[in-house]
Structure formats: structure tokens, C-alpha cells
Amino acid sequence: MSAHPTYMLDRCEVADSHTLKVYRENGGYEALEKVLKTPLSPEDVIAVLKDSGLRGRGGAGFPTGLKWSFMPDVAKDDRPRYLAVNADESEPGTCKDRVLLREDPHGLIEGILIACYAMRAEAAYVYVRGEYRLPYERVAAAIDEARAAGLVGENVMGTDFSCQIWMHKGAGAYICGEETGLMESLEGKRGHPRPKPPFPAGYGLWGNPTTVNNVETIQNVPFIVSRGAEWFRSMGTEKSTGNFLCGISGHVERPGVYELPFGLSARSILEEVAGGVWKGRELKAFFPGGSSTGVLPAGSIDVAMDHDSVKGAGSMFGTGAMIFMDETTCVTRIAEVTLRFYEHESCGQCSQCREGTQWLHQIFRRIERGQGTMDDVDMLSTLASGMAPGKTICALSDAAAIPTHSVVKHFRDELEEHVRLGRCPLAGTSQPVGAGA
Amino acid sequence: MTLAPALVAELDELVTHYPEKRAALIPALHRIQEENAGWISPELMEACAGYFGLEPVEVWGVVSFYPMFRTTPPGKHLVNVCHNISCELRGARDVIDQVCRVTGASVHGTSADGRFTVETVECQGACANAPMMEIAGEYHEDLDAAKVERILGDLA
Image 1 (cartoon, rainbow over the protein chains, first blue to last red):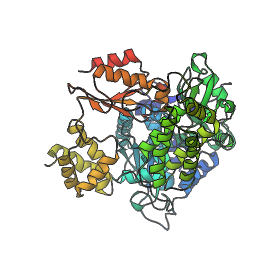
Image 2 (image 1 turned 120 degrees about the horizontal axis):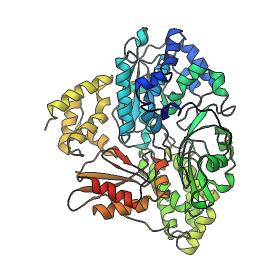
Image 3 (image 1 turned 45 degrees about the horizontal axis):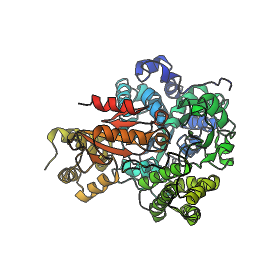
């Protein structure tokens, strides 16, 4: 693999990268100064973002500039408007925003300020998952530093622009990473997603115009403003521009969070970035972008890691969180673990999701224990087809159905072998421990 | 029961961050739980409801929805072990076994001496350093049996 330019993680490797002093020494807040002092108009900023091709890094890959442009015209709508930053990172396999929050909190703050300026938002809320204690403390301390330096609050950098940034702590519910679930939670309620439409830009926090962006998405903004759309488009592919943070976990020699351009093959990421499958073993399967994306078999390892290519291979780019499984892995057990997760995280509003995730979990569990029937294998597909697509308020039901379909499609032989043998054919994987298995 | 005056003063500042008071409910519940040795009693839910002008059942609805809120007292140390995919692939079940062996607690249970409560939790976002456990807000990563024993042994 040829060396590729990086930008997001460069600063994170400097000692005390989380402090205002070090951030400023490394070009920090120059993009904000460029916006406020040139000055660029909000429309100019949105135009640069659109031109850059930046797509959201939270899983859906929606174009960021376009999303921002959905906020209503201030001349016709004078309601207060908000930015909510989604730092509720909890898609299994995804561990990238934690690095940014911890090591580069001022990069996030600068991005938030530029985003709020562009969308004319008066305040931003950073919704951090409750378990991220150190990342939360780092961002909170950085906001205090920035406020004391006149960068957050009234009259930012002595201009007419004012913007508040508040921290908000979640409490362990995956569904609050869904943008409307996040807003309900931010309002102090259960994280029950809202039907869409209305979309957040029209009816968001407290019924006001709101945009929800992922941490990594926001972190890209100052770089694009400073260096330009053309620079950004010089990395990645035509439709997936820039670099992304790739969280690599599972059975590899060098798991980690790596900054990579879109478009590298999954094979080169596995072999050259992650050091290959561990223990000299062969690859069996991988999730390309978190547990909500379809599991792909080893034969798909040459897929290019960009939104369109992964979709073409029958899965999704998701959060770019790649989970690799070696040849000894019981994929049925991994499906059981995955569906246990979705059962646990279903908010319970929609019956297809509330009941369907339980049934899928139970069926995978009994197949893995050697207690399933051949009918169970077909029942997995039937149930998953009743859960998605588009049958529920939010996409959690889809997120459970998609890996289910992919396991039945690519690993039907393994499921059926469990049924035929009446036990797990893969040694050592069917021994549950504790009460939590 | 009412909330302690120092906590009320803190919440009075917190609610100014939002256009509606109720928005501070979840951060407030975190603080209430921290001040009450890691759990929220029915009496504290009532006191919290009183502060926010809500019905107690509304607070209960929120508390019961979010996994980080506990309605029973944990042991002195709450050990949360991740059992999601990336940790499962790298030995989470061995870690859970080891945690239970060293603490004498079963999963979702508290040791007889009251020192440890062990829980399994879903993905904590430490996947590249699996397997992991979290104790008092601190992540312990890249675990093996020896490391688990040492970490638990170091707890007072």
C-alpha cells in the first residue's frame, strides 16, 4: 500500500494534544478565524462543504453540506436553532470518535463553531455516551478553556457571532445514537425515536430547527474550510471523499484506529494496515462497517472500502468499523451475540423490532446450542423479512434484520451443520459461561 | 426526602444550559446516583421528580429505560465486562469467567462480602483493545486472565 496523506490523527499524536495551547501551536482555530474575519458568509461555508463532497461519518453517509442546507431560511423562520453532536458512539466495532474526543477536543469545538455559524445555530449540545468518562472530561475542559479565551459564548473572537456549547451525558442506550432518539433523550425523556417526517431540520430539539452530526463529520469541517474543497476531494474516491477513521477489531494482528482514504481494498486494509489475520490463520468472514452491516464472507475481501463499493458487495460502509473473524469462528455464535445486542437495545415502540429481535436471538441461540431445526433456519429469513426494510419508526429493526439475512445467505451451511450434528461443529465455541452468555 | 442543598445548587446551574428544565433530567440522575453509592432509590426518584416538577412515574420511566441507572445497590466495586462482538472474538468469555472467579460474584450478582458486583455490558467503544472491562469510569483494555486478577486485586 502506498503512503497516503493524513490529517485527522496527525495532531492527536502530539503530546498534550487536548490542550488549547498545543492545538493553537498546530494551526488550531485558524479555520474559524478565516470564517469570521474574512468574513465568509454562512452560505459560503455551506458551499465549500457541498463542494468537498463530505459525507456523514456516523453510518448513513449522507452529504453534510446538503444536510446543513435543509435548515430553514432565517428570513422566514426565526425560531432558535440548534446543532446536536452525536458522540453516542455505540455501534459494535466502532471506537473512532472516542479517540477524537479524547485527543482532539478543540478540533471538535472549532468544527462546532463553524457549523453553528453556517447554520446560524445559537447553541450546540454534545451528546456523549455516559460510559465515555475521560472523553467527556476532555471535551468539557476544552470548552472551558475555549470559553475563557473568547472562543465560545458571546462575541466569538470579538465579532458579532455568538455560540454556546454544552455537554450532555447519555446513560448507556444504543438507540440514543439514532438522531431522533438522541433528541428525545436530550429533552430528558426515554430515547424513543420519532417518526420522520418531520425531519430534525424542521422539527428537532424542543420543536426547533436542529441538525445532528457525528463527531468525525464535524472534525473534518475546519480542515475543509482551511485547505479547500479541492484538497479534500484529492483524497478518497469520487463519491466518498477524504479520509475516514477505520476502527479495526477482531482476529487481526494489529487492531487499532487508523486514518485511511476511502477506496482501499478490504484486503489491503486487513493485510497491510492490520497485519493480517492473527495466528497465521485464514479469514472466514468480516463486518465491513459495524454490526448493523451485512456480514461478508472471506471471498468478498477484495471489495473497495467506500460507500458505493461496499453497497455493491451486498453490505454497507456503515461507520467503517471492520470486524474480522478467523476460520475457527462460529458465525452462528457471533449472530447470537449480535441479535442479543439488538434485543437488548430495541426501544420497544414497534412490535416488529421488540418481538423480532427477541425471536431472532432465541433462534440463533438454539441453533448454536444444537437444539435448532431446519425450519428454524428458514424462520430466520421469514422473521427478518417482516422486520425491514422501512417497517418501523427507526432503522434499529433493519440493523437486526440485515446481519441476519447475511448470515443465512453466506453461512447457511454452517447453520444447517449445527442442526444436523445437534451441536456446534466448531470446537470450543459452544460453551456458555456465567448467566450472561 | 429532598435532594441535598449542594446538589440542588449544582442542578440549578445545570438547568440553565437548556431552554426547558426537564432536559437536565438525565445528567441530574447521573449526579444523584453518584452521590448515592451508585444507585437510585424510589425515594430519590420522588425527590428528583419534585425538583423537576414531574410525576415520580415519569422519572421512573426514564431511570428504567437507561442501562447505566441502577435501582438496586451495587457492591463496593461495580465491574462491567463487555460481551459484545469484538470482545467475544478476543476472549470476553474467559474474562467473564476470570472476573467471577476472582470476585466470587456471578454475572448480575454481588459477592457475599459485598465488595463486587459483576455485570456484562454491550459495546463500550473499546473494540480495538478488546477484551475490556470498565470499573468506576476507567477502561481496562487488552485483558487476559493475569491482568484481570491484578486489576481486581489492586482495588481497595
